[in-house]
Amino acid sequence: NPDDSANPVPTPTPPVGGGGVPVPTPTPAGNGNGNGSNPNATPTPTPAPTPTPALPCILSVDLSSLILKLEGTATIKVSHNGSSSLAITGSSSKPSDLQVNGGSQSVAPGEFATFTIKSKKTLGTYSVTFSTGCGTKVVPVVVVAL
Image (cartoon, rainbow, N blue to C red):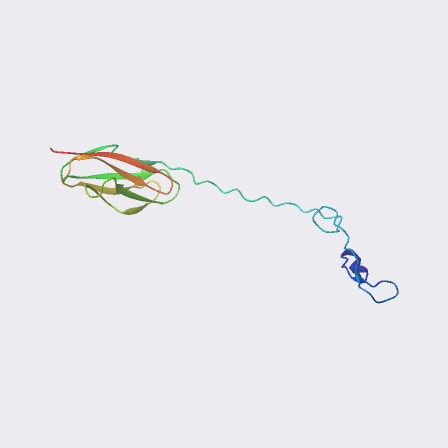
């Protein structure tokens, strides 16, 4: 077949005189372009896509620090400069003495989440951390006897 010449397949060649062990016919070596013996096509490598790193976002709070009396409460509003809705979570440095209510809230761009901070019965310096997948904001809280 004339079509078989483009893709040779090794076949055993019997020795002259018949009999004995067949010696395989060698397959032609490729021409170095990665396409076997096809001299025309050259493969083009496909570059791997570069992952886009998550851009940091900035969280903003309406109170940069907070002073609470014992068993006092206050609210803090938290927003972000991201381009899509983000889940914002509030947490206390010591939940047994300073409680953060509000859980995790989904906040759209231009909107804000409200968290309630409540001190318990212990004086001290604490912090409330608001976090998203792209950034955090820490608000220092001092509980005083007023």
